[in-house]
Length: 232
Image 1: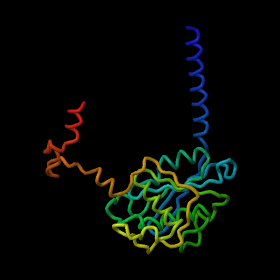
Image 2 (image 1 turned 120 degrees about the vertical axis):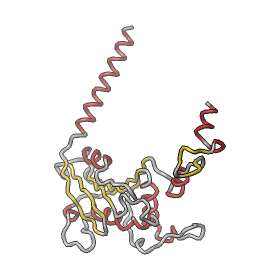
Image 3 (image 1 turned 180 degrees about the horizontal axis):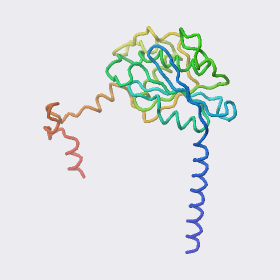
Image 4 (image 1 turned 180 degrees about the vertical axis):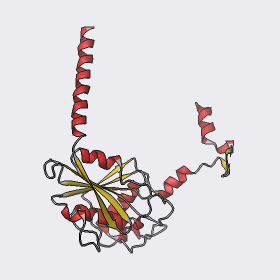
């Protein structure tokens, strides 16, 4: 009995210590600055205070999604709270999932975001919050959900050139208008990533729906839900 009490107390104290370590790390002072990346891209730069004062300050993180607004993504806010400098961006296709033909349409904004973290002003801008960024030696791009294949596409082209997405086995070769001289990231993080738009679209399609206007009118022969319940 006493061993169980001691064990439970130890677990409780461990959880308590972890909680205090987590909360203390998650409440850093962060300065937030609006950044116009140009070409329809907008972003928020989050810089923990004091700049240059932490062991993670040399790491810059860029986050964007192909069609959802990620300018206030918890990825950026929480990583900034923990000492990383982050740049979360929206693009011309935020809230417009059907507006882009392929991930090549996003590459220019991603490149501008990476260059911003390197301290470079966006093209055509003589002054920008980007020019005040110094000391970042490593840049990580993060892709969540559908941004996973987008960031993978970008890094592949940045490392291997546009020829990587124009190979003859590709059903739809990319357009290489915006795919030259892309700055590569030092690392790529994929969170709950899709395999791509085509696979995602296929998985979103329900073969049991007979008429789109009446989704409750279903073909039981190919209704996965009914078949799963039958198996259970």
